[in-house]
Image (cartoon, rainbow, N blue to C red; front, side, top):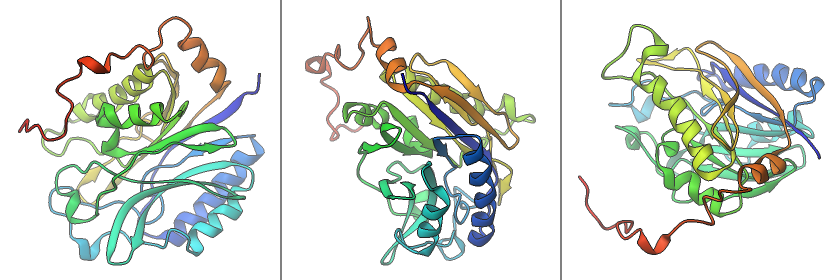
Length: 283
């Protein structure tokens, strides 16, 4: 059975896109030598993230770039045969999206615009409106950005679209309302791990979770990159500092093994889920 070498990165990437690309050149070169097939980089790797979730200033936000511009073309040349998922601020006319692109040297494989927006993020970015899986050299997969993974429907939609692998790219900070003195004790630290494990287990898929580290503005990022198996088990992880979670996995075999007896997606009872319509108000 073919195995895929999956790597999810925890690292700090600031507003300087040129510097980020220089850093990525070294990272991708080293991981190519190590035989990595899939690299999942953090949200906002190119251009950094906003520094204030409650009152972001759109005028000073991350630099937005063209989704087919020179930065993305350069990253494609760096990637070569490796499948790379990377987050950036996407320019679309007068709008800016918090976006991710999955690519190899052969071209663009898939794109995602962050759908769910916490706190005041809507002041800095427009919202996406779709979750879609796509085919890659490492199998059929989909992407989530940050807050998207809080919502079970996001990952479930990708799994229903045939994804066996989900790349969850984050710039996920510690709590901004109830900050703990130590990151491992922070409420958002616990939730970050919980969502990663739950989304993998409930859909019986592999999930590769990246995250920013360090600080931007008043946000302190958690790190905690990881690869989670389809039973919800953490196969490899980092902590609050920069690092790489790496694992060799036969994705198709692991998913099939997880679904051998209990098949969560096939065994749903959609006729009983009567409270799902979007027009219900739960505020």
